[in-house]
Amino acid sequence: MSRSIPCPKCGSLTTNISIEKALYIGHPPDQIFACYKCGKRVYGADAVNALVAADKTRLEQLQRAKEAEAAAKAAAAALEAQKKCAWAPCPNDHTPTSKYCSRTCSDRNAHAREKARKASRSTAPRSPTGAAPCPS
Ligand SMILES: [Zn+2]
Ligand SMILES: [Zn+2]
Image (cartoon, rainbow, N blue to C red):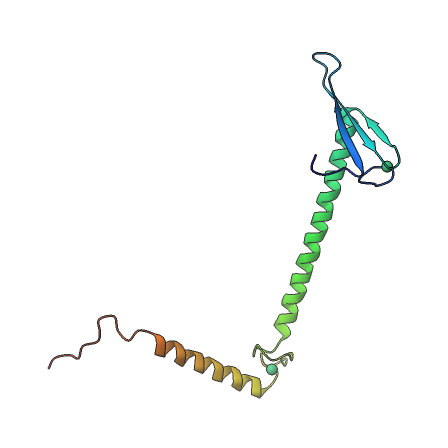
């Protein structure tokens, strides 16, 4: 057992499920759930399996709730990002008519883009063949 099943009575995780040896050949081994805190015991493989299944469902629901919360947070963040000025370093929201908050940001972004374009052009290889001048 890698994980303890919480006690259905007190919620404690100091519990144990022990497998009793088969009483006779052909008899399935029995299971006993025991809580060390409150002393609750559940006898029988069926009852113990039901406890395990109920705990699994509980954990899955917890996981689903967590995922839903994360998705809602991501959606809110995306919505928040959409409101931002398109000039990345600017902390302002953009105006309803533009993707920038101001003319300044629009200019800055245009300059940055122009600069990036020039930089990528200057580092690009001129010609794969060496661009020999055409003999006349
Ligand atoms: Zn208990
Ligand atoms: Zn801005």
